Amino acid sequence: MRSYVFLSLLLLYSCNQEDSDIISNPEPIEDHLNSANRPVAKTEAWWQSLHIEDKRLVTQNSYDMLFIGNSITYNWETTGKEVWAERYAFNSLNMGIGSDRTQHLLWRIQDVDFTQSNPKLVVLLIGTNNTNGNVNSSSEVADGVIANCEVLKEKLPETKILVLGIFPRGDVESLQRTKVQQANNLVSKVADNERVFYANYGRIFLNEDNSINQDLVPDGVHPNLEGYRLWANEMDLSIASIVDK
Image (tube, helix red, strand yellow):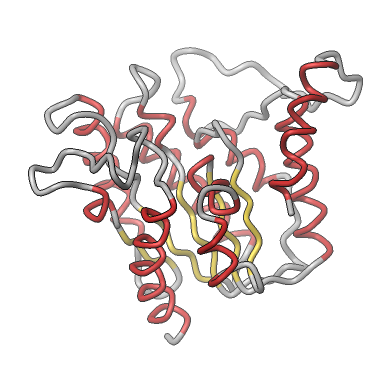
């Protein structure tokens, strides 16, 4: 599906960075504002091409579930493709795009008409790229995640939303690990357990000492195949309980 055309899109971008159809942002984002909850499109051709393809698919087809996020979501169809094929491919659309922060996803979902897709459930995982360095504070990251959730609620009034906690990042005592934990604590409050649900599966990627398990997350960010399988095992329990409500 989308994964098969990704390399060609990268080649297109490297060969043709000047694009007359480039998606533009109406106004620059001022530095003193929270960038995480202000929608902004990326200008790279490969990113635009993936968004346009997602937009085409979601406006022309119906799906039971939409998976929306960044590269961790996108990789369901690459690293985790075996699990994806077994459990989700038959009734789901993967709308993950690598390197997205909350503001990029916010722009994407505002630009899509979800009427035709009418999914039963959206699985939302976003925010890890906002926790890098001094890009955003924990409260700003949380605001960005919640902004995405609010737009999805508005655009999909009959759909339930499963918001996932950002997976652990950095060393146990690092500022990034703390930022992720604080952002997740704030995001968890969005759940009303009627339309919006929250789940944090981060523990499955940790060792007993809370360090990131390199056997499941080799680069410290993206799960490997076994990581995706363990994630699916946990998430399927959540999905079953939500859909049955």
